[in-house]
Image (cartoon, rainbow, N blue to C red; front, side):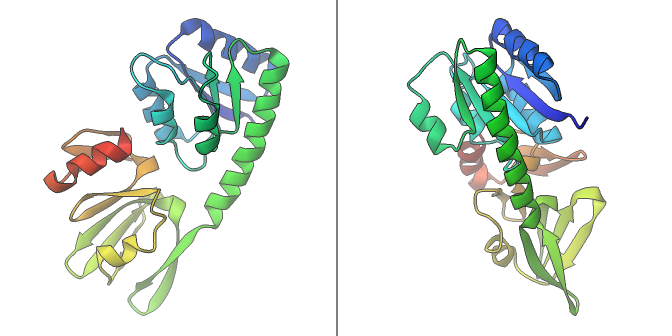
Length: 229
């Protein structure tokens, strides 16, 4: 049986325990739990699970902020004791909204919806590509493979998964215009990075896979903080 990778973020251990029990009862769901939101988000960016269970009212951070930073392929379910966030959940395109305490049957319905959405998001992500020129040929690059782009005078270097680097004679501004605006952020005059590839960040740098640290330019620091926090 193919397992569906899931991550749950909630600062209440009892809530995480219930989700874990329901996942085991359901079967086919491989769950990792996090009571510390930023640690959970870092793991989500690294492993890109199909489904995320996400509490909203947490002491350290609001779950709505986490939801805005999830990879495009993640289908997420809000799990909260507060009913006033239904509109926010709808606007963020959550797969479902579980009001605590929820039953096992209601949990299963939410998981079914999230799995269907995850399949749709995955197929959509795989079809998005950009075309760039490399010497005298056109190269098709799947957007999902791009980790970051570096400007080098009149060229750009497009760093991709599996260690692939494509060099194209074009400006950074030109390639940014080809990319989905919600998926990438400019952190420096020389660097644009994929938001869902960021493992960790500060006002001064971002960490990307495998272990690439890039500087955040002074003029871009505020915007980076607004986009990623």
